[in-house]
Amino acid sequence: MLRSYTYLISAGLAALFAFFLWNMNVQPPMDKVLVAGVIKAIAMEPHRSIGAVLTWKRELCVFRINGTDVTVAFTHKLLHPSYFQPVAFHISEPLLAVCLFEVLPVEDPNIIVLSSNDGSVVAQAHGHEGMVAAVKFSSDGQELITSGTNGKVELEEQGELRFWDPQTLKESRTALPLRAMAECISVTSVAHVFAVGDCLGSVHVWDEQSLRPITSWKEQQSSGVSAGIKSLQFNRDGTNVLCAGGHGISLRDARSGAILASHRSASMCFSGAFLDSGEQLVAFTDETGLFVWNLAIGESTRVRRFPPDTNGLLEVNSRSGYVYLAVGKRIETIPVQSLTKQSSVQRLP
Image (cartoon, rainbow, N blue to C red; front, top):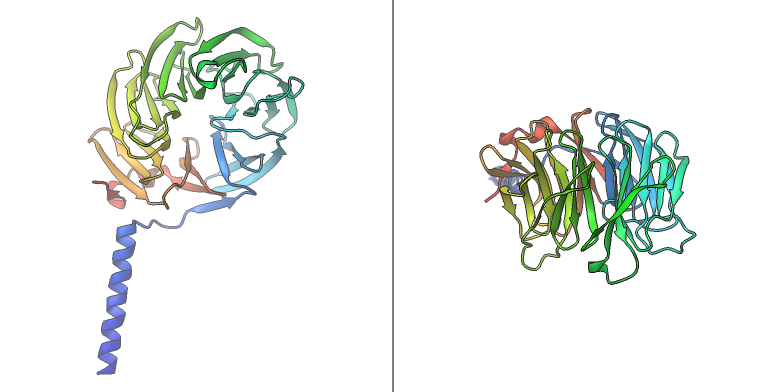
């Protein structure tokens, strides 16, 4: 009799544990790399297996990738903090740009270009009188675009874009004024346009060569969620742009601004990216966690749940075939192929 009770209890516990795993949608363990501080930004080099993260301890860590094997190449200590989109790789040359968010004295540089091979400083400059929030190399690599403030009036009225020679950090064009500070920048080499997302939830698209405005729109932010566009990405042919922020995530026509699809969220969507096919997206919110959005069938599926208020940052590296997710002090590697298998994830309501 005792043996029967023991068997029943064991079977019940096993069933309960199986249900818990199914309900929490636990996935196989992912490879991780620990860094010294909590990660607040991640970037990937477009054509090489190399990436970088910035931590709250003001440390820039450049790592090399071989599938799931991620090894630290070098670290570079920054004197001041960075926020939003402060790291970018050059499209073809071994260059890495970093911007510093704090309002600094004029003698202190707030834009730095480093060698992505060894971390040596190539050029540095005091590029904005106020804060510097985002940095991106142009689609042809001939310019470095930075977003910041001019330090003269209130934050919401003093945004600006500046354009630089990457090798010297000498200004290459006249600054472009913005109504609000842009928190992220995205470029496309196919359509020759670039887009910025600002702290008020607006997106602006310009012609990269003439700086002629093409379109703009304002995303409707979710109630109780701070405004702001946190992530922008063009698709392969530059026709559509993916926007993530306080509104959730949306897909827009890059020329007209027309909304093609949207996934509303009651929480901040920190980042989103196209998967290889362009028909599926991967995104991260502090409510849902990591999820995949299939544009073809209009379904969202949860890949992994995280504790509330977790800040997850995504980068997709098509060369390696992996998604790199920065959460806390670790980088997790997720095969792109595993995200496209609908049977392995839990459908969201």
